[in-house]
Length: 325
Length: 254
Image 1 (spheres, each protein chain N blue to C red):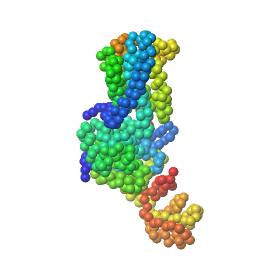
Image 2 (image 1 turned 90 degrees about the vertical axis):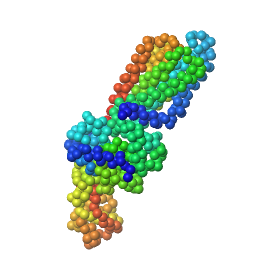
Image 3 (image 1 turned 90 degrees about the horizontal axis):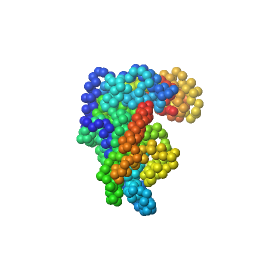
Image 4 (image 1 turned 120 degrees about the horizontal axis):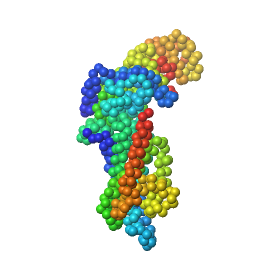
């Protein structure tokens, strides 16, 4: 593996010892009359992979921008790497890696030039900038596109290049805002694979996502945000165990009157959630619950038994799905 | 351990490296056309009147150098800055690094000053070829043009950081540049202008740059003391810089 740049981030993050990398207490962000973040408490430890899960507009990006020291908090306390983001912003940013929601690469420059010019903002020598750029291009599997301009690169390639750029200063923490939103499944898996490697090397990752699969794969611990508040926090597994049954039966019907079907299922499994197009029947043993639905006289056109996931936790806690508008 | 502003300048130069020749050509096109067209053709009539102490071609050349500074600054200080805020979001990426707003601005100002000096030097060579230079002080022309560039670029930065559409900046370069060129003493002394508009010419950067350039090329006195003209240009650059810093901070710091 070539990524010494990424590997040495392990040592850097280790320096902080037991002190949390990010500590927020009652953190608030307001834009005029709108409260984007309504008083959240978050503690992120070195080496952990931490996620903010929530729908669009839940306050995830505002939180990330405050942690990234580009947006001052409107209230509450925040320390990043033990420092004050308002007073020591530049010092903190020198040790952060930021991958924003929308790629902001220079489309006119080559992939490599995007990395080498950015490296110079961190006071790296030209030789060191070139060395790290080549190493990181290798790491994100873009070595062959090193000399091509960014403009014609695919969305997945641009995303990987943005991630490489975020690693150029061997950061103690990498902030990733919706790292795979807008990517096709194949490109998404490639990004996940690279991020998983970083995580295995002990790089602290802080990411926002509204993909539960992403959160389950990458996060050791996560908070679920809704309307600017944290409504739950734990490891993905613990959240699922706490808020959901082991399995879910997804039932589809020819009729649109799902409410009356749901009433008929009272007593079967743990509880039923009604979605616009299907019923979700929560039960520890899904296969045992299916015959029971037939016993109640229901004739579903589609039946799917699956393990419950973070999507179900979110639905349970908010009454809405993660992706609905 | 490069200074952060130098790193920003370096970033702009990496892109410039690929296009510098074509930008020199395009920055020179308008001034050279005016130089040849007005200087030689119109000049042959003007020179018959004998109202100028020097050939008309020589009279307008230094003003065109100053104009080159204005032209590049308005172009590079406006639309690309808006693009870097709004569409390419380059300033967001810089703000995420340990850069401050002043580094971003000074780095780009350095880039604009360099571009102006390259174009001004190229034009100066054209002038020498036409024998339009009669003093060694002409060597300062690129510097004066760069100062005009800074005086115009900083307010353009502030404007570009305050708007969401390129319309206003398009207006300035399409309908603002030409009047400034026509009424800032490039082609005729501003004393020919009606009294009411003359103060406007005095206050704008271009006329002050034109006076300095003409004095340097033709070894003649400036309208005001040299330091007076320089002071006007520095004042524009300084006030513009303060405005640009504050507008950049506001735009980035949400």
